[in-house]
Length: 149
Image (cartoon, rainbow, N blue to C red):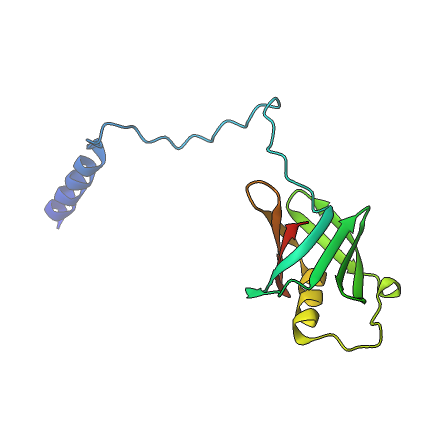
């Protein structure tokens, strides 16, 4: 029994002493924090006039527009309009309904319009295209893809 334990201990010690033959040493040191002089890439603003191009992966048909600025946002389809207040911190966005600023103009919203209103109201993330001329707003209610007008 003692002999078996001794052999196992020697094999274990021999295995631990072998070095990685790949040439590069592995380091487990914590990465150095970036200097305070480093600048983060600017994130475009959601402010502007937009055309809704996609609603949760489906073509929007070109009727919906969005106007975002000054802490307010609206989504319109003809005279039908929904309004929100909004905030943006880099890629994080938040929309809060402003029912007093919304109008139905005597008609019932289509299913696509209701989906768009829900998607904008629930949006919490803004992912911008490379040039900032398009943005996808996403959250639990779906996604809206907007293109600057």
